[in-house]
Image (cartoon, rainbow over all chains, first blue to last red):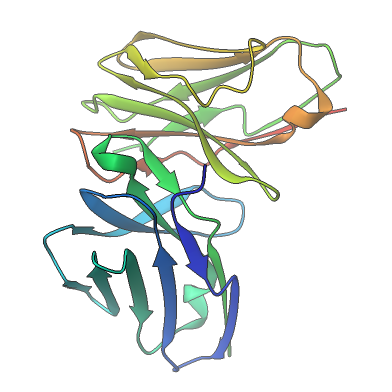
Length: 111
Length: 113
């Protein structure tokens, strides 16, 4: 079953613009994670935010978490062509170790 | 750190044949996961191990699928007999501790004709 659902499914922006992706989930969680996947490669962990945190930063990445709305957002500022990839949110369903991934957002940065 | 290593990178086989996918997790990691990725179903968790013991195999599609972890540095996912609908990219991932980031291998692209 899908725990997280990303929105939008696809996003195309110009280099230098900001990109925002959203994730909604269904059950209580311990943490939420965001991953990036380049074409033909495995997923790479970007950032983890715990259920008692509301916002977290890592370089050009900013993640927010609203547990009351069961939603999270990933903001990439000053996008670059190298940011072109698919982005996934993942949650530990009901606090279990197993991570359940959403369908992902395909982000394209146009030069 | 070599990362999670999967082999083979690509596998093409005929329906009915046995397929074995291999994974070497990152040294010291105590959790190992097998995921399957398709366009239609996205990323699905098949099974995961903790300290070489299978913890949850509820995602394994059917009895044709089996996974083993004989030691901390090696795991296999076997499909016997394989079917065209098994065609997908299979990922192995490992992590240290619970509720921790996963480190993925680059996957095995399986095509069953």
